[in-house]
Every structure is written in C-alpha cells, then in structure tokens.
Amino acid sequence: MNRWYIVGWGLLVLVLFNINYMKKQQLLTTGERLLLQLAPVDPRSLMQGDYMTLDYAVVRERRGELPAEDGKLVVKRDAQGIATWQRLDDGSPLEPDNFLLRYRVREERLRLGAEAFFFEEGHAEDYEKAAYGELVVDKAGNSILVGLRDKDLVPLLTQPKEVEDPQGLEEGPKQPE
View 1 (cartoon, rainbow, N blue to C red):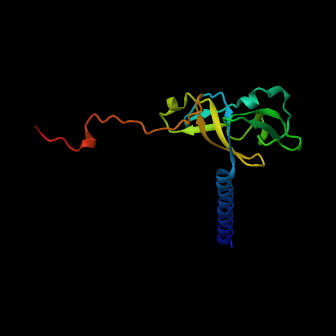
View 2 (view 1 turned 90 degrees about the horizontal axis):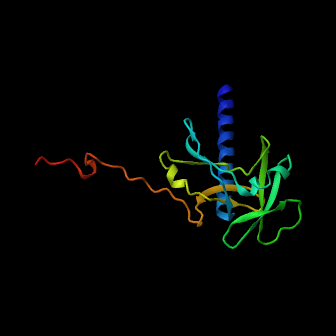
View 3 (view 1 turned 180 degrees about the vertical axis):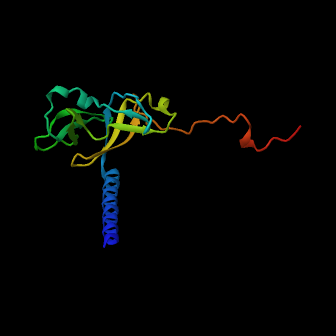
C-alpha cells in the first residue's frame, strides 16, 4: 500500500511539473517582450552563487502609493519596447500599446516575480552594465525574465571566459627540445 502511495504522489509531482513547464514554454513563444528599467544590486550568496537582485523603476517610483494586496498594473510600451507606468488595473480596456503585469505584495514590497538574475560565478562584470530587464508577458499579466540589456538596449550575453593555459595543455604535450 505505501509503495503505491509514494508512486502516486511521485507521478502527480511529475505531471504538475510538466504542466508548469508547458505553460512557461507557451508564454515564451506567444508572449510580448517588454523592457523594464532597473536598478541592479550585486550581492553574493555562498549557497546560491552569483546573482543580481533586480529592482524595477516602474515599481520603485510608486512605492508609497501602491495597494497592500496582490493585483495587476498597466504599463505602456514605447517604440523601443521600454515599458513605463500607466496605472493600476481597474478592469477597463487596454490601449493597443498597454500591457498588464501581475504583481504580488510581499514584505510590504511590490514584486513582479523576476527579482533575481543568476549567472555563472566570475561573470559579475559582464552584467554590471545592466539597465533593463527583458520580460516576456502574456495577456493575463504573467511574466518571465528572459535577459538583461544595457543602456543602449543591447542584450547582455555572457561569452565563455578565456582560460589561461600556462602549461600549454591545449596545444598538446610539449616536445623536448
């Protein structure tokens, strides 16, 4: 009896995980891209590795006037894809260049969900120039952080670091002279 109980729960977890994964993939393929201005902070975590905490300007500018419960806000996307604050969602129709962003209130802070950007250890300097978070958003306001961009809106991609090879191992063994 206990074996089937454990197998059943394991299968349920796998099914729920796959459903969530498919929803995220659907969002990535059908969602709209928005750029949100940010103010990054670069902490280090011994348990999690290197990461950047993201603080979005669209939220930071309105801290004192936002409600205490979860909801949605409306942002307007300009020709460059940069989103700016419009209003809290009141259910009224959206303009063609307006989008919903779902938020949650946690510890008296409004959070858009994508609050941390993790990267490989030793690549912090690659992301120091981050000025915008790139999010994919669906019609319901669900979002996924897909990358960071600099002030010129150029995507910040980490290229593999050159590893010095002081012993010349990549060239093969050295022949005696």
